[in-house]
Length: 204
Image (cartoon, rainbow, N blue to C red; front, side, top):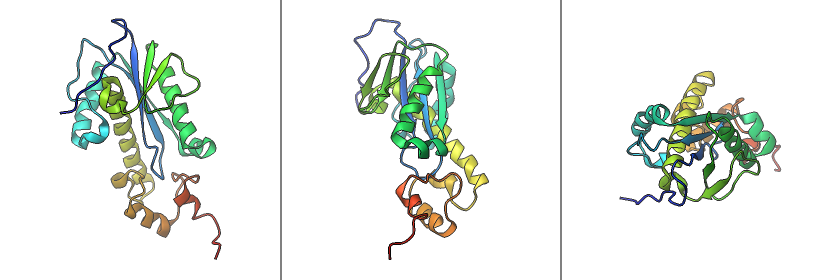
C-alpha cells in the first residue's frame, strides 16, 4: 500500500485547498478543474488519485466529498477557450477560477503538478504526484474526473457517433477512426494536432 505524504508544517486549522484537473489530453470536450477544502473532522476514507480508482469507486466517493468538504468548486474551460489560449493556459485559468469560486477563502493551495498559475487568490505550492499523496488534491481529482465524465456522456447524446461516452474524448483508435470518417464536431479542439490536420490541405 502506498504511503500518503500530508502537509505537516502548517498551523492547525489552516484552510488548505487541493486543486486538480481532468481532461488535458483529450481531443474533445472541456478541461475541468476542481478545488476542495477538506474538513479534518470529517475524514473520507479511500481518497486517491482518480486514475487509480474504478469508475464505481469514484462515483461512491464523489458525493461524500461534496457532503463532507468545508468547501468545493468545479469549473469548466470550454473548447473555444482552450483553442484560444492553448490547453496549458486554459488549465492554469481553470485552477485560478476554481480557487476563486470556493465559498471559503483558502490560506494555501496545493496544486497537482510542477507549475503554478500566475494569478492566484492565495499562496500556493505545486505538488508533483499530489493527486496520489495529498488528500485534498485527491478529492479534487475525483470531483474533476466525475464531473468531466458526466459532461462527456451528455455530449455523446448531443454529438452521436463519436463515442464520447466511452472514450471521453481521448485519442483512442475508435475516436480517431470516427474523427476521420465524420470530421470534427463543435466539441473537438481545433488546436490539437489530430483535429487540426483534418482542416489543413494535404502537402502531397
